[in-house]
Image 1: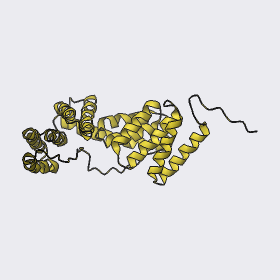
Image 2: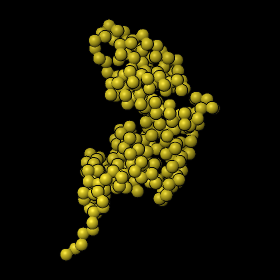
Image 3: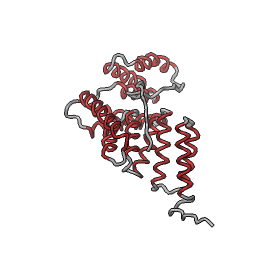
Image 4: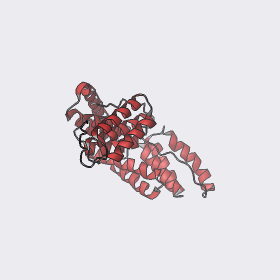
Length: 267
């Protein structure tokens, strides 16, 4: 009779079964059957411990799928879990760097690409990793120039995380908490219109229309071509006349219109 290898400690299925599922998920992803790839990857998570490298592999596939679907915040959060489990995987760092870039975390994106280029196992992607690292440096040079030469990368990472926290809190309808995050982000460096525009939304949702108007006007002082603030200003008259209605708003990112050209990679 064939001898079955014992399961690793804490695993509910054998390693070969997990390897087979990972291969299936990769094929499904390559075929752009993203829903199926997510289902297969999520199945793996049910059967193995959270500290297993294969758990990180499954999260990595999920993070790539979310990236291809342009659900970048979910991609970023999923890949963040993966790199915590396996901090030596160059491909996980590279993919999180892409997700970070498209969630307005350009500072953290640079750090991730640096980590990817330092990690083993880059193989044929080593040159691509270096190209992305160089591009990330150019982005950061521009970002720092907006804020002043004494502004540090650590400060940029903190500021961008505050902005993203504000977006995430807004998506949950936590307008007061989101307001605080946007104000903290602005206080660190007032150079982009989107934090002011999103702050205006938080204030409008709290029926603080005069403050919302001031926020939208400040957004336009920063960037007179910021069309969303113009639209929100026009809508304020209606909101003031109909305060019992709940308006619908889209929280925005400084990089919402960028063409991603996304090419996430797998081992």
